[in-house]
Figure 1 (tube, rainbow, N blue to C red):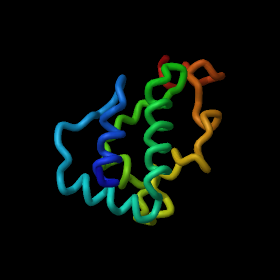
Figure 2: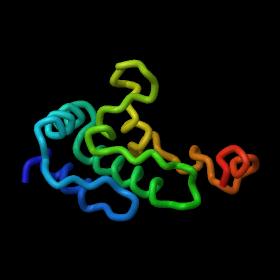
Figure 3: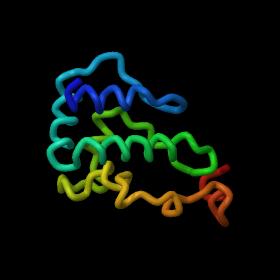
Figure 4: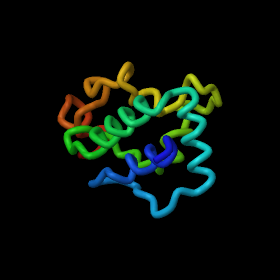
Length: 114
């Protein structure tokens, strides 16, 4: 299995609140290839795991359900700077659950209507 297929299959191996894919299309393959070049295979897989865990943990107020392509190409802000990609916040060096609000923390329930 090549690295592009490995990332695709790792993404699709996740269950729960998740956007799986039926087919690896050229746009997805291109996005995976670009991230393999600057993030690397293992970091992409760790980022997918962290994103999945956060998204599927009901105690966190994180509801952004991205496709694989969105996850790999989405920027935090409107900039197109590859140092500001969403995926980077989920890599091993950057990710800490404590940086994400829990729904029961002070004010979160009222702010988000929980």
